[in-house]
Length: 35
Figure 1 (cartoon, rainbow, N blue to C red):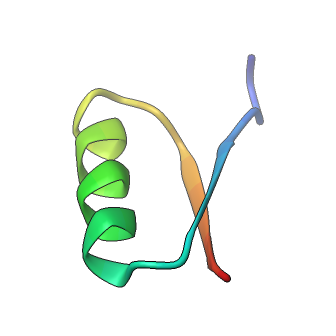
Figure 2 (spheres, one colour):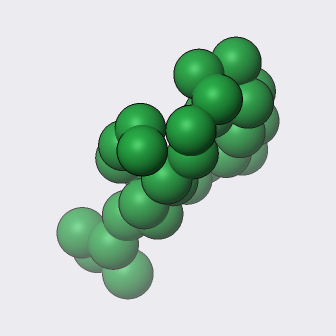
């Protein structure tokens, strides 16, 4: 699991940031994209 990331794709910026914040806070590596 060395370089694995979670890709979050969401069209609402507030929801995207909330998901990213919670995952990052729990030690997950994330990438985000808006639709």
